[in-house]
Length: 422
Image 1: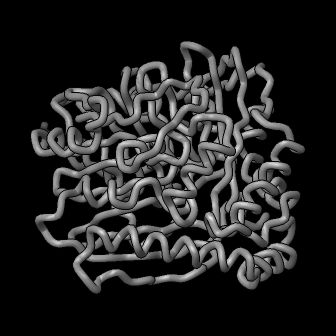
Image 2: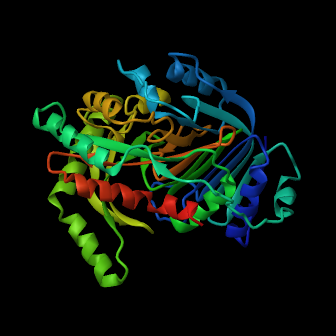
Image 3: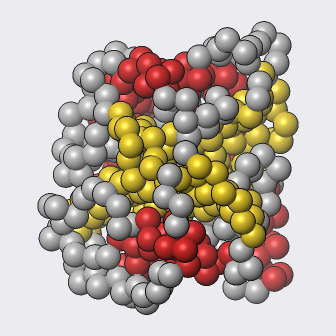
């Protein structure tokens, strides 16, 4: 691939044009940090379009097959990993209904790649006129055109009963914490996926926003959470546990932020997951290298305050990239502790297959680094069968109040519901 560097005066306009251009391909993805300051970020935005080579997993060998695919293709490789690949890593199963029908894993080597750092764009493509093609795009005002009905997969009363039952498992000592999720969905849903992403990204900009098109399947995400990143020999994981709403004015907002920072239940949730993540990273780390760089720090986003911790480790040069990810997958913030028992109970209490929700979207670089988000705060859409879904959840502990947990789920759903009501 040829490489061209350029400086773009209006990077926001360039991203809009490039994203619209990319969606004309059968396969495309867009990662956007939305200007959030993150000392571990490598790029402001990434756009990949067209698939020169594709990886779809064989039954029972998704992770080993991915290792072979990466070894055969030393290239920038974006893709996604679905939550249900837990079944390949542990003696688990997924039998809840699935109307979205995403593959369990998908990666591709792009025909065209745009790596954006502030207003500098590196273009890797064999099409010499690519920059001119993007500049020539006339950004069309996007219209969502959604007229469907959004409904929950379980009722509020059923949710509360289930939380009480989960707390009984906690009381018996089966688990300490479980991330319990519920689905909202729309059948016979027509919408413009690009317009949905533009609306969601404007309403709820997040540091790990992503748009992924795999032919008729779309991930439309405003995720605030990093699952795992490798930069050189350093591994970074940043679990989120602890949520509070934003205030309508500064004094109220600061009070809500302070209350979250001092909330014993939220602190306990976060610390439990930090311990789980430390254990996961230990499986691939150089002994003694796992550290907690930040514990229970509050970060503020457009819709919510979040409590985030940063756990790091070091790996040796010969450690398999895929094994680093698989040893920590699925991410502890979306399972609970102990992890395997929590996932067994998730399957029992939830009524919908998670699929790509609470999985990961991201990329491998040619230089053997990677960065993956957690697929939360995301619309998932199958355009062929017109099924639209999003899921939200919260961590259930013995201290949980079922009514408050339900309210937290509705808070997390707000941005998606607002987008679909436009």
